[in-house]
Length: 315
Image 1: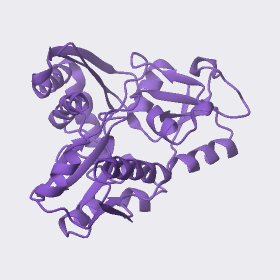
Image 2 (image 1 turned 135 degrees about the horizontal axis):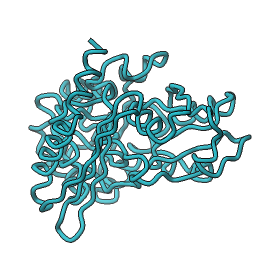
Image 3 (image 1 turned 60 degrees about the vertical axis):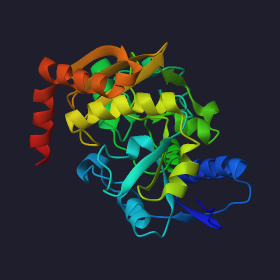
């Protein structure tokens, strides 16, 4: 395969998305120093609609659809996504050519800068916490039904600004994004998975290419981290079986140790009153089968009824 003079990366325009695409660019340049790499910023539906909760504007490719279209139209050669934003069914003709090594999967509590809470448990009864995630909302209310949950949208910088200007007590974010943008000093508490299960794919970057572009697929595959890819496949298999997305409170936490794959997962009601949680272990090579089997267990525990209730509310 002949190297092309220029490779074009497609990405969203947020500070975090640009950090991610620049990281991929640097890693590719280290391996292919003669390659010219350009970046194209593409505005997605999720970037355009900022005055409504994600759960109210649909959940199929909110942050990926327009980028995939550019990929298929060959105006870009590869796309860099946060894996948690990538639907389990991607556009025909596209493939996830690499999933990069995962950053910390956990969520974090960020206290209002003038309130200085050291932990989420320090927030007084009736306090208010901001999050855009139904997954976080459900698990927070299960832990603390006294809390008021406030919806928050926008990029990381915007969310920090909104928190500072508000009377809220704090907000929840993914640690990976906070770390990547150098804001770790603002973290009040890292929330362990036994408290708040992360989102499917949280902390991992996905690089998407055209399926028939062997050259780009081959160079991108050099950035693939097999254990992360394997674990993410198990999480995404569970999500696919549950037919979940932004409108459904689903959390997962996976790890591979000694060739064994362990997956924890939950389905929760919107008010947090009902949480169905279980764990399953299997061979790492069977991660997808483990994900599907755990999804079935959650559905039969009562999660299926909760999902149906939520879907009926959104119809």
